[in-house]
Every structure is written in structure tokens, then in C-alpha cells.
Image 1 (cartoon, rainbow, N blue to C red):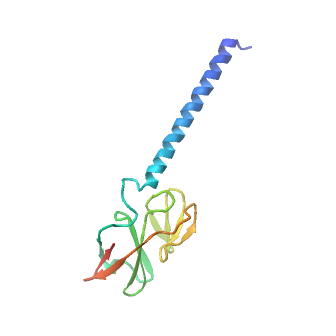
Image 2: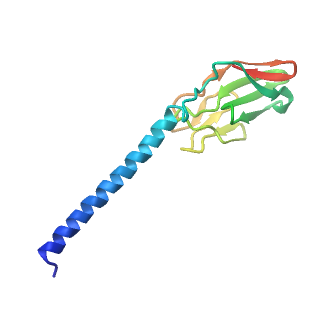
Image 3: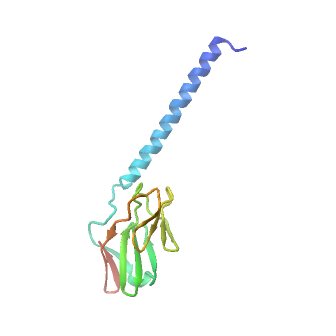
Length: 143
């Protein structure tokens, strides 16, 4: 049999564990909110032109992810380029890879068509924002 004192102690310990669990959940939500705001305060679409490198690095019929610049560029036909933000519209994480024409968000599993920006799988509900891109002197300039 347990004493009234040990029963009261168990109640206090259960309450403390619930508070710790709730605080941990709050921290996770705060981190997700910070990601949603763009992580380090960066914007999803560049405000100034950004040089990405040689246009030849983006294969015709394929795409290239520029993680550091948070951009993805596709080349549907020779000399034609399309660019989109590589920042997921769900929680702001940067896409980590392109597999069979789909940009993958590593945080929650959203998938995007890298040729159109369209959401292929959620939880993201909004497409990737389009970014102007042009080839100039053999180099790609976005923004």
C-alpha cells in the first residue's frame, strides 16, 4: 500500500513532467515559427540580382538547386530558364535535393515541381514563388 504522502509526491511529479513536456513543445513551435519567418531573416525571393554561375550548369530538361542562394532553376529547353524560390512555402525550410523533377523539403516532406513551382505533395499549400532569371554573358542572373 502506498501512503498519502507518496501519492501526493507522484501527483507533483506527474504535473512537473507535463510542464516540462509542454515547454519542450513550445520550444519546437518557436523553432518552426522562426523557420516560417525565413530562418535568419532572409526573404524567399531576392531583392537584388544574384549571379548564380554558368548557365551551362543547368542541364537542358533538368534543374539545379542553388541552396545557398535559396533558388532552384530549371531549363525546359535550350536557352530557356525558369527560377523559383527554393524556400518551402509551408515552414520556410530550404529544399535539399531534386529527384525526378521534384524539389524536396527536408522538414515536413513537401514536394514541388521544379519546372512550375506547383505543390505536388503537402503540407505546403502554396506554390514556390517565381523569380525572374536571365542568361547574360553565359551566366545566370536571378532576381
